[in-house]
Every structure is written in C-alpha cells, then in structure tokens.
Image (cartoon, rainbow, N blue to C red; front, side, top):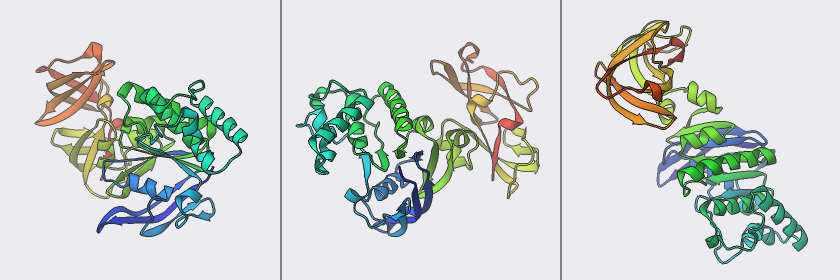
Length: 344
C-alpha cells in the first residue's frame, strides 16, 4: 500500500489543457474515484499516475518516493482496463501469471500466487480455460486477478465495467469493492457512471475541464454539492435560481422559498438545489408548498419519477408507486427548508 500525492499536475495536448494544476492526496488503502464527463481529465490523470503519460508540470509521489520521471514498469502499479486486455491464446492461469513471469518469480511461488488470486475472484477451477470460453464478467475477474497477483502498491481502474450489461455491472462493482476492502490496496477508479462511483468509493473526486469541482465521501457529494455542476452531474436534481431576500427566504420564479439560515453566501444571487426524493406527497408542516401540473410519469420499478410544471419551470419529483400521479393532474408537494442546498 502507498499514500499517493499529486502536486499541481498539468497536462496539455496540442495546446489544450487536459489536466489543470490538479493537487490531490490519497490515503493508504483508500478507494478513491475520479468522476466526471468525457474530456474532464480523469483518464489523463490516471495515465499520469501509471506513468503512461508524463505531466507538463507538477509531481507525483508514492509515499516519500518521487515517481514523476519513473517509468511505468518500475512504479509497482497495476491497471484494470476497460477492454480487459487478455491474451486470447493463453489460459486463465497463464493470463493471471503473466506479470509474475515477467518478474521472473520461481514457478512454485508464481503458481501459488496465481491460485490465491483466482480464489479471491471466485475463478478456482477455470484455470485452463481460454478467455473466449468465459463470460464478460468472468473475463473482468481474470483481469482483476492479473492486477492483484503482482501485489501492487496502487491499483488503477480505467472504466473497468463499461463493457458489461447493467445487471452484471451492478454485481461486479460490489465484488470489486468487497475485494478492495479485504486487500486494502490503495485504489484509483475512473468512471463517468455516478451510481458506480457512489457504490464503490471511500471518496469521490468530481472533475470538470481538468479541474476538481469537489472532493468528498459519497453522502457529502450527493447531499451537499458545492455547486450546480456537481449537483446536476450526480443523480437527478432540481436547480432554481433566485434572489436572497434574507437569510431564510429566496425569491424564485416558482415563488418564495424558505431555506435554512446560516448558509454563508457571497452574493444575493443564488441557486437552490434539492433532490426529487426530498419532496413529499403532503405539504403539511413543511416550509415550502409546490403545486404544478404533471407532464411526464416514468415507472422505475420501486419508485415513480415524474416531471411537473410550476410557473413554466419543470421540476422532477419521485414518489412511492402507491402515490403515483397521472399525466395532466395537479400535484402539491411539500419541501422542507433543510432539504434545500443553497450555492452562490
């Protein structure tokens, strides 16, 4: 395990800034996810940690070792790729043991470590199969076993579940998180999937245009976004602009809304943020009352999502199925002041 420090990393491609003065520290054994839209710099950051790319400025440290100019094969990192990158002509055991072969470990030690890695990913008994004889989920487990068998200081994941179907993706991401907790390997995970990031991470780094927008644990990122970009990127959200009248009242296009006082703000022009599930089917006893016409209803299995129009502004709601509204009807929902996040 290693503590990872990135100090003021910058990387440009043909004059365009991909990573812009990024500083970050990752603790020993932490599972940290770089999350953001395509082109935000997350994969470039991961490749600089691995040594596949060099920064134009800044430094990379593993514990007290400066790794900025150290080649990839001397960094003791391991990468789990989106495409699995398995050798089709090799068996499962040969694929997993390839890194050990390159390191010239004795055959007996290599075989023992391969067996241990396959047991950790529940692939014991499939040692002699070829990748083409495995399911997508099994191939991804082989790629994971190949990464952990070398006992890396830092484990890197480059959107590893993108090629799996939705059901399998949910299963494998839980398995990855459980394995990381058992091994306590410092891990950096890159994804654009918000749900995936919330499930696997100790902390999430939300990136945009090469910069960090917010760092926090999953609950903080979801419940207390620092700005509208983070709120909008993580899950479904409602965002309304308004003018602060006092520390508890904001004038908005959908009416005056009550907020919790004491939120430090630099401007009277603010944005109010809340989640669809924060609105309740009854407005009794709640600070805010929102009434509008239902425009669209979406059945999600365990809940019903819907949009409704309030003074020409579309809001998102979410209710239990037994309270499901119908398109065209008027709904009145309650929203408590402490469920509204105010950002400048």
